[in-house]
Length: 182
Image (cartoon, rainbow, N blue to C red; front, top):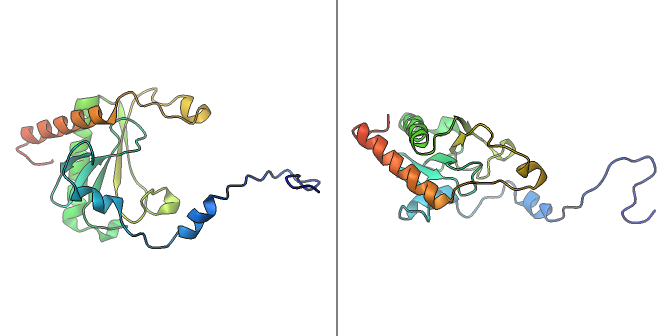
């Protein structure tokens, strides 16, 4: 049998992805830094995508969004489980998610939302060590053949413009509520 040939009677195809071994070996090893801990150390602006800072949590646009306006509510403290949140962090996380929903509705006019937490790498967390709540605006027809066939997600607005619009809507919502995220 030659290299690349299947043994007789085998239907299993093999895809060699040798680059994945480095990733597999890294699982469970401590990281030197955390993106979600690092982001709030910088000044707010389109460079770090923070659209609002609360007392215990902040809101940041996702740099690799599923849709325009895809944002996350993140506690400042490095936590990986819901049970590690204080009552104040848990309450503010939900208040900021509500503020974000109102602000995204005002600025981007979505038809609905997906909200979710991915706890742990196997659950899909890209940064598994730092809890974060995704808020993803959805529109009727926002999915099409491009991600499946072309492995490409089409985003109709630049992230800097989305940042400007969402940040302005958050400020407007806070002004209307006396400065409190309710």
